Image 1 (cartoon, rainbow, N blue to C red):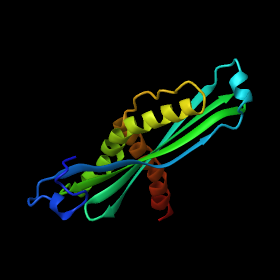
Image 2: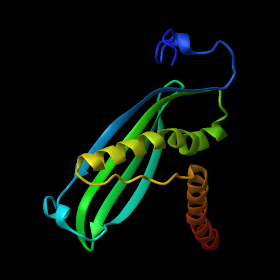
Image 3: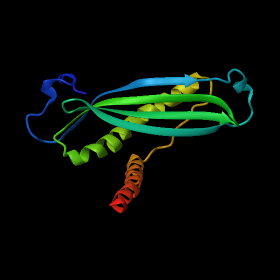
Image 4: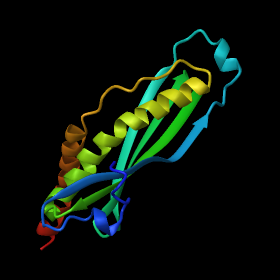
Length: 169
């Protein structure tokens, strides 16, 4: 970031109608770590099963300014026993201007989470190591494929409702 450009200031707004996308800030919005089975969990010989879930959201916080939040939850279990659970909400503030409305959801659902993911991955690995376990290195995520899958699920959920409404006439 250029030190001469104030963060979220009026001087950072372009004078033209050219599309603008800039990262204003990246930060951890929320983080929790549970280590419920310690210290006994450190004595276990079994390799834990790791479950990873992701959630994204994006919303406006000002004129042309949006917050995107990528929440990553990692749970490690041996059988039914939870070894550790970490949840990280990695967030970013993005300036997005002069972008067609139809393109905003893909930017907030694909591009912004793709930027946030490496930060979330590092935060998760570091926190798990601080809890006393070997780090979990999350595999790369194709947010474009996840977004397309989510859109298909939403369309499929709407299709039966449309059929019901049409047959009710």
